[in-house]
Image (cartoon, rainbow, N blue to C red; front, top):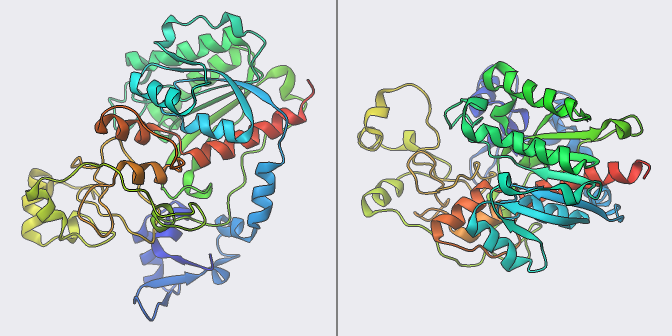
Length: 410
């Protein structure tokens, strides 16, 4: 990658596209214009030195891949809240031997069993499981405890929300199993929920259980071979008697940003175009409106009359609501996938066809292999994929954990 669009530069820096455009207006940034498309872009070489956030592009792809592939020792894992297998696949790719996968959703368990018949999949509420038999046998305990209680899209009640108490079930599993390392992931909103008090409570519990928590980190999936602007909060904790021996390092960034084009067409990520599969459709009235949204655009790109008609009462409210009537772009990473690509608040329309993304397109954006099948209804499959940890992101984090475990004494 030798050049960056305004949007991709904004994504890397963690600012809005408008922020970049304002810098251009002030003469702080000087874009070039593509003679064929007419679009503005920035030469990467001209941005080095000005933005330390871009230094990872100087790394070699070979160095990144060597970092991933050099861990060969086998370590055991146990995964809670496993979902449809995004993190589980990442752990498997890195070399972990997972002793048990626990998930309450029936369809997600059917997905895990269909793809990996040899896995020990327990379809049950975590509250019903005694983990005593695994005491002292697990190197890594992982899990993305349900995040509705902490998500900005939820009720924001944290530990007052009954779903928040599932973290305490996660803590119970830690106490019974006594793993060497803990990995937890959640929505980025957890870090700031209740002015940081929710996360502080989690930190206190982890400390009481005898673990040292590495400073939690929000990882952007676009930096780890994932063509999606997904951000997740990761927590890694190490048993205190191991924490003094070696330092844990978060995964290196891959020196390329992948786009929707990379996800759905043959190239570096996949060696073929995305397979044809089922997907949701728009009602005729909605399709007529979505047809007028340009690639990369959203409701504000519609004629004013249609904006008012489509947005109704929301038309007069403040805020961008950029997820509504949203059409993706071939030349950018996908927006964060949700559980339903056709809902009005979270639309993910194909860049050039007037329809929601299909199941296999969803799966590719989450970097699942084409051979990974999903069970259940169409809505359930979308939900499973939308809730998953992107496989390549899970792989990158798992590799860092393996490096750490390989470095500490048995």
